[in-house]
Image 1 (tube, one colour):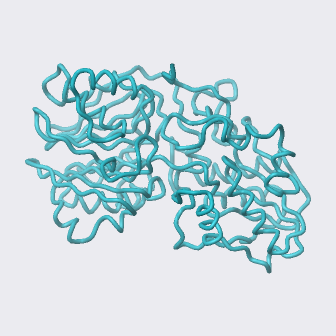
Image 2 (cartoon, helix red, strand yellow):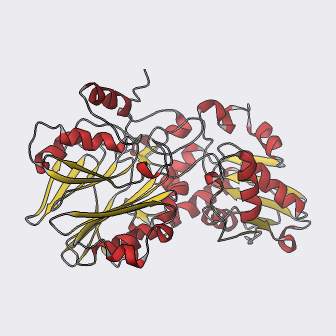
Image 3 (cartoon, one colour):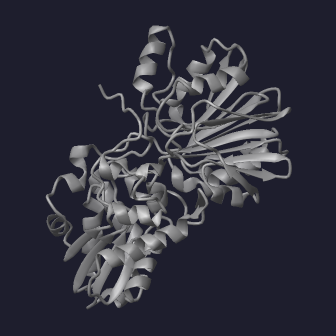
Length: 459
């Protein structure tokens, strides 16, 4: 809910299915929570591409007529929230190119930390960029590869890029699926009969009635064509550093990541939060919707009843899309309403998943007080966000982050108008996501700890 942090993107691909475009449409619809600025689909009939991209939600970008024009038995799709490159149609994905070997389409979830370096090198070599997104770099590297054929050039290029990427790259007849060496992004595979499905989350596999096959391993690539599936590695399997915010906020609760139910983990986050920061209260309320499981877990552990004290207007857009803080505040008022019957004269525990800027948290606390609450105790089901993300989550600079502007929780609580404020510990987060506390490298917690799993190439 806090207006300072946005999701990454979502990718979905289908190989060898007569309804590839329709399946991709439904898959993207299931991944809509990962990006709401633009959507696109590229389909191939084995001879040529047909593609369409647009700004807005999946249902706004595609009509039945448009989908009918995207015939083919393979397709890749993308939903985007801009983390690298402006929110413009030219940056909407999948990006489509023509090069010496034919057509090429790229759908990318994540950010390349060495993008500036590679872009400069390519421009010095004469490359002309049509977009401001780092995804275009991947296409240029493939086109300029010393390896002539895509099945060689694609995997070779993966060795050159660094950062976070869940990638789907398609030619007229082939599809390359790849995940960065640290596994910072989720990427799953499924099957419908002999058809192969790739998706950012398992909820999208469920949406098209695909059977989960397996997760793509960090540093792995799969080349899928009429000959079958080839697999290989562009990097040795090292420390897995899946973004911990996938479990806290980004992923849909009905998804399963690395064998763990997102819903059950969020409930456990709330339970641990209640153990770490108990308080006397009459009711537990969630900031809808991503915080609901954590609030339920807090209520279960504490014995304080959970109630729907805040109602979300399902037709209001996400507040972070608004360009100014004034409009974001208005969007919050349009989106959320407090239920006076539940909150009046009550001591309220308000559970949210994170605080980034703090501005939206302040507005929600005010909303609860205006409904007559006697006390408002804010509990956050993640640690303090003190560091920016360089892997595809758009958030403020280090200086703009709320946790860096105030010395301690008490001061932060006063700023947002709460009677008390407490955050989940890093140890509590890692316990919930089933990580050995002696080896935290299997989850990326850089936004909390400042320990980044890759070189950031900042100098």
